[in-house]
Length: 116
Image 1: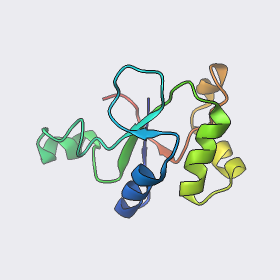
Image 2 (image 1 turned 90 degrees about the horizontal axis):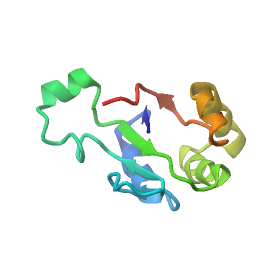
Image 3 (image 1 turned 30 degrees about the vertical axis):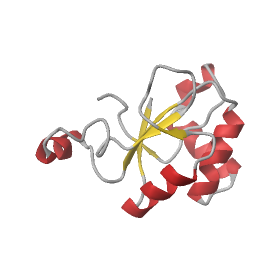
Image 4 (image 1 turned 135 degrees about the vertical axis):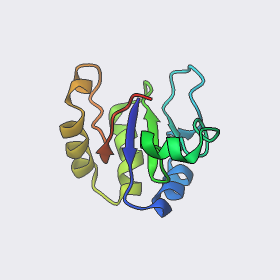
């Protein structure tokens, strides 16, 4: 699970609507990659003041990485981010180096603490 923030709230909808490989859904315990918007999904019932203290806001997304090919996932997200696959992959690798032992997926954007 990787939590990250985008630069502005308008990007949230673009990401959720434009990913083709990564599904916009809460985790169902499967092996596919999913992306969620905690503010309106998993944490919607939590009072706004508490969500704010926890860092759950209108630019936070969570990515649950599945078993798809790492390059396919990077390509899916990089196009939306307006970056080349190489630029996106390098940024992801710097922020989440431990993941490379399992897969060659590179992290994206501004990684936050993934714990809830």
